[in-house]
Length: 442
Image (cartoon, rainbow, N blue to C red):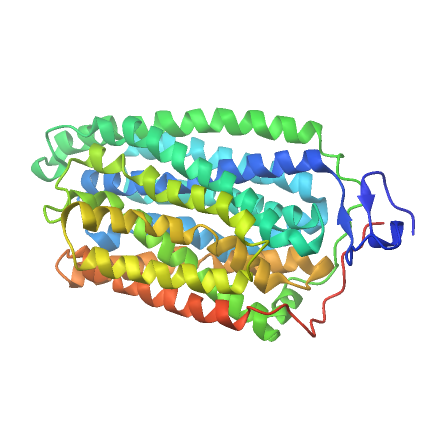
């Protein structure tokens, strides 16, 4: 079989110790890590937008969580079509399509602000998220293929660290630009034209932030387009969209996909509540801007944990590490819910450290042995990220039922982590009996 330059298999050299085919292109790892940084940062900005829109449109917690619902619903609707698109046009062109869709979503914030209508903001977030989904369909399997399968867990965790870097930087800047403009007057005290004018004026800070992102995304898309032919010899399984779901017949993959649903839901629920949680008098009782400055600590824990985890996962069974971190997250939720002040605040933020290795580890454990059906598996798992829409909405509803007591609402994320711990123990041994074929590079 003829191989294009930069593509190797274990047959190239006897006794190399490789048992898989992979792409030998180190410079592409920088490209993938840059994409992880971008979509991670943009996703985490929702944590800043939620308290902003909650105040402007006088929303309860359930209504405010519609931000996450609309954003993560894109994973349900776009995950499989996005995988089909990537299989048709390739990883690099797929990345360009995703980046341009993200840019369009950012620009939709302009008419949303001009009309001061909450539904239009939700639509803009859905379009933005659709682009994020396509980019994520590209990055997860591609980073897995950029090296031997035996180090996929570590490599994906390391790449996810750049995702975390984005989630640290973007909310820090966003809290200053977006939350810092909240005036002494509130939407609840205004009516009629005065209320409309206030909403238009206050959402301009959101518009300026996202228009700046649109410009940056356009530049990145241009760079990727000029390198669209860099990945030579790329082929994908030609199965139908519905055929992709037959992967759910494999118990390990199905359990892992369910845990992605629960993990993303738990992570997003906690991140979405940080500002309001810190504002509670029983916790810190600070302003929205000050509370927003704590968001990077949550995502920063994930950043530190992923760099450390990329090493730990080469020494300890990934399943055991996953179970340990999930139990740790539950313990921190209990501590935060049963305490007050600084202890309640920092124990909640420390959950980010426990989250650090969860997504890449669940993804890698669930996807072991998928081979050239990696794009299909990534599409299914991206559909499972829809948990980021469902669990936060349920958490918000639970908070409303509890009269705004957010500590009670944290019980739902705790249940999610308990199931993830069970998956870690279940998948602590390497996969066996998988039916998927290995990747092929022609």
